Length: 349
Ligand SMILES: NC(=O)c1ccc[n+]([C@@H]2O[C@H](COP(=O)([O-])OP(=O)(O)OC[C@H]3O[C@@H](n4cnc5c(N)ncnc54)[C@H](OP(=O)(O)O)[C@@H]3O)[C@@H](O)[C@H]2O)c1
Image (cartoon, rainbow, N blue to C red):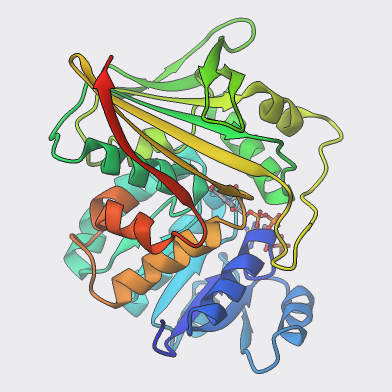
């Protein structure tokens, strides 16, 4: 359990931010509600009597400094992160407190590694980008599957989503990423991130997910934040991510609707399976995780990260992805109430 420490949540009234606030409370932390809109903050605070809220804007560093005053850590849930990550990390470094975000934007996550690795290391401050469903969970699973392997030839992360009702933040972040790519696609191959131009649709293939998802058509080269987090610490030259075509179609629909709650925890009916395969020579290892609602699950991931950082259960400092800074198998075991995990299975490939 948390020790009553105050953890600031920037973007607290967003869809993901709300899950994070509730999870922090459930874990014994005291959430400090931060955001740029006073009215939305007040409305959220009204549903959490006793919690403090402070208005802060990424364009006003002084407001961020005041907002973080007294906080032991900050979780940034305000995306697009192309706009918010750097100013909030700067404020965390000034305050000397750890920073965790849920960014799924490849370029924003890369920027965090590029611009803050040295400074965060020097300051001895943990900065963990993509500590969420995309980026964080895949990295924890690949790191777990690697086990005693120091390197592998390939890592494959296949996302089986039963549906995908995206939030406004997801759509805005996707739009920002597309703009930054200027019509190019991106993939991680031959040990580097490659931007390339291609005509037509993304390639498809059949993927055998575990039951009940079963055999599904997935989009190949549906490249997610795992291509930043995994290679940031594991020597794997080919990192591929896949997405069930049905979910990708939901996401791209012009009339895509936001997730709606179906249970008392506020989760949507969306089921997920993340199927990870790493291959070294003729041997492959497979780890499968499943659960409900990719937004909701991001909260226990981010809060467990803060819990471990504040408790000193970290393997490194500075900017690091989940798989590097935490003991990945132990971290996943700690989330057993939220994520069902199949034990690692090794076979000939
Ligand atoms: N990696 C993952 O698996 C994962 C999981 C969940 C979420 N995410 C990411 O997290 C972000 C938020 O998602 P969401 O589902 O919570 O979306 P959301 O419900 O639309 O909320 C977005 C939040 O970000 C705030 N925000 C946006 N731009 C801002 C800025 N420039 N300054 C301050 N606040 C800003 C919004 O505040 P206003 O209402 O004032 O605009 C709102 O609080 C998205 O980028 C999403 O992709 C990633």
